[in-house]
Length: 125
Image (cartoon, rainbow, N blue to C red; front, side, top):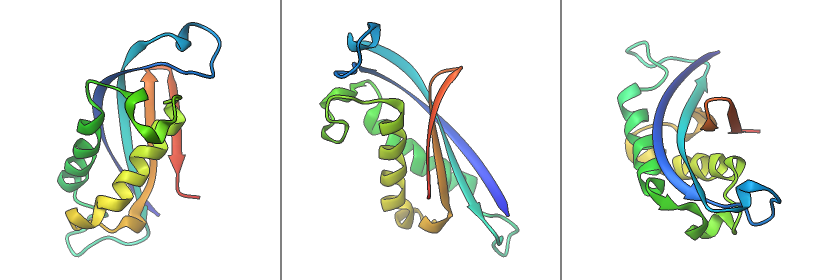
């Protein structure tokens, strides 16, 4: 099994409505996002997927989140946790991979780091 990874960053604000503590207040993070693809075969050029296309797709998705208040995005329903952000990015990428000539079946996981030591992952089940 082969796997490959690209990453991108974005900055955004959020608060957690159902959390009791300092994260219920508006605050921001410099998020780091890792996009993982996985597959059993390589293309004729010996690659699982083109890094350039993966980066372009990921950058397009995170650019929509960059410098925003994540609570304003309806999919997060007032609680834009790292877990929900990871799922949102995963499903957004899954829908758009075809536009970049990428096989959606290769999409394996998305990791979202709120800090260098705190990360959530959404992966294909």
